[in-house]
Length: 231
Image (cartoon, rainbow, N blue to C red; front, side):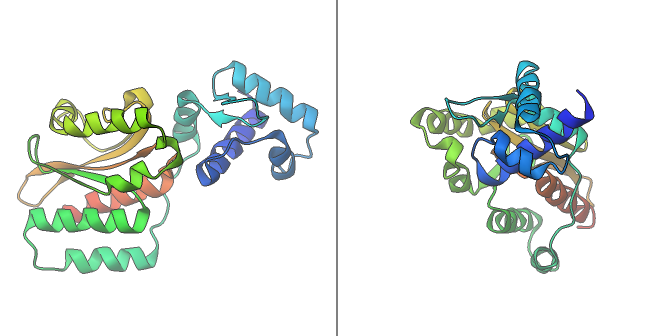
């Protein structure tokens, strides 16, 4: 992939994450800053499509990222972002509270759900699992079809089995996209293994569509993971 195609792919994915809409060549011509013609952009998009990084969901001129495209984006463009000061204040209030550890983790999960419009799964161990914010997942435009809702509901019904499969394989913060994600092929997850002061460990997971804000979710999981070392 040449540098121009990389820039175009980055723009396509960032725009699609924001809008959930296919991205057309007109937007890219205006946004690249490369002074490219529409024909050049369309040719580059055709090459990106041929290589499997984007696809045309219907007869519109726009394109959306494939699983391969998202993986390239995460591997090459995504950087962990700073967490908003107001969010940090909310998290710190929870961390300074006198809650039992399980309750504290549940409260942190609820804060992430409320602030980041996310779905959160906390595995205290392989068998003890808590999840919250499922409605945030179902209201995303990707999951408006009955089949997808049914698929995700079945995954949630077998959540303990899926967590058990990955519990010992996760050692840091990882991004699992599409087919690599144990919680549904149409989703992505950002998963962090956390360690408490008493040496107990678990998983803190943000689950969302493949069209998730990876930079923000990586920052949130990393922050939670680092904070739990002290409790």
